[in-house]
Image (tube, rainbow, N blue to C red; front, top):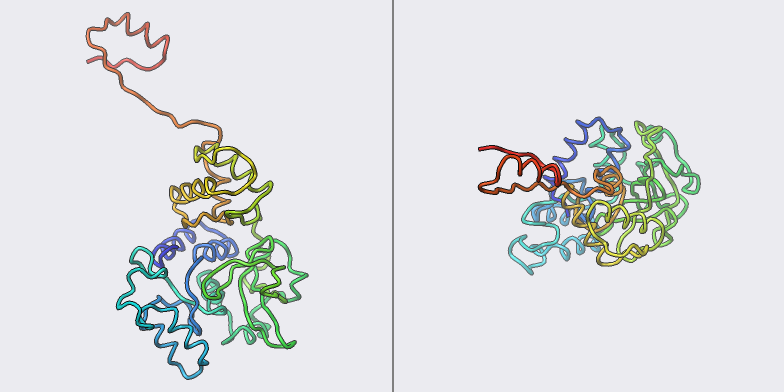
Length: 308
């Protein structure tokens, strides 16, 4: 899991690279994977004090308040400090969101402001969107907010479609879903003004340990070419492939989770060295060697002569 400071630095770098707003939104959403859900929060740094603030707000229901207490080891009394908490990776802080706070914060980083205090008011504010409709009509490559409607009027949940039917949203923590995931029942989409025409190339589906098929085969071939060995290419995403993915992610400054989503696919697709072994240079010193003999050796085996 990435820290808030790490993601903030990445965002600054991505902006300098001149990415489109759609590309930037996808990268930020991917970078936030695993960050915690806290009712009412809008991307603040996650601390027990800030969790306590939201837990004690008058607008919160008892169930949501209890969830905040239960999921914080300091507030529930199981530990005196944050050390060891999954949301405190390596002693560094993350950010916290509720569902509409997550999409709102990501869009803010892209220079887009979404009006509305909740998912329903966000969706119903026409000025927020360049296009709205049913989830079945969502353009496959579009970066868009997605919603789950209940009772024919209330938007109960929201997330960010990052292309190819893949959705990142915050519930318990920032996680993945798909447009056809029945457990979430996504019903509507809305493209924020400022992301119009911001389709993102969909390289491959998001894959992880347990996945099978052509995308896994391609991944394994690429990793082997790049000298991150997965062993036999069999189209099955097993433990060896997961470890190779994590080694690649670590070496390329990505979040190390063993999941191959848009950011990891892009890095793998753009990585240098396909089919080429790394160059290794050696220095060999042979005392008493004549120049003629040295020339004979280098002409046969290659290399250069350095005279002392």
